Length: 341
Image (cartoon, rainbow, N blue to C red):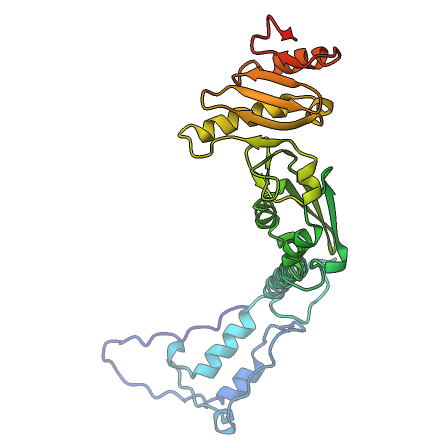
């Protein structure tokens, strides 16, 4: 579009004779505007419709020759600028979009997808935490997997029969109602091993409600005291309460309990008795130790002079061979030179 012609500047001439010239009639600016060819402009589909000024602004404007363009009304300058704006051609394969801001729409779509992905991850994490918390609660704190009294099994290895099974069950049932995975097995084992008759106790649990108790009993090897108040004693010098029938089957130990060396002598005597073979121990009626520490065993038939509590295992092997011979006394005080007479 060609810009409108600028009005000619007024030049001052030297004064001269004034000639009257006929003045040309003034032309209406609106008529000139309508005759001036204007470039055709095409509006894109997404362009805003032209804004219409108030009716008062549509009145024709008087323009005098020599009026500069900057003094024109704003609406005329705006119209000239709009008519001069070139049309931006679209790519031949690109479709027209109704969205005037296609890039912002893509950014917003990506943001929504990112927020949705973050929300799904958060939900998955919360769900996993809830599941783990539920499993932990069910296993460790709920009543679903607790010890049941009917599911407690007790096994006792007791050849002599000195362990009271009822007492063992009472201690084991202290775990009833507690979760299997939090059952204090160590505390129950310690309580069972505090019983003098129990040598070793093992407590295990089985899912979902079971518990097993295994007892190894001590074995009394002798009886210390008189026949009426005899107290059983094991190989580790632990005193055990016995029945009368059990007392009668054990060798009786006689010794001076008031001696200063009574504890050491009793320990040596127990060590000597515990090394005897079972068939030999069954024949021992009494076992005694003197103040000097010499040990003797009174058998059902014969007497065994053991001597001090030394080389007990060697003496036990020798006495097992000597008892095959008929004799009244078997002396193994010196195991390298045993004597029978």
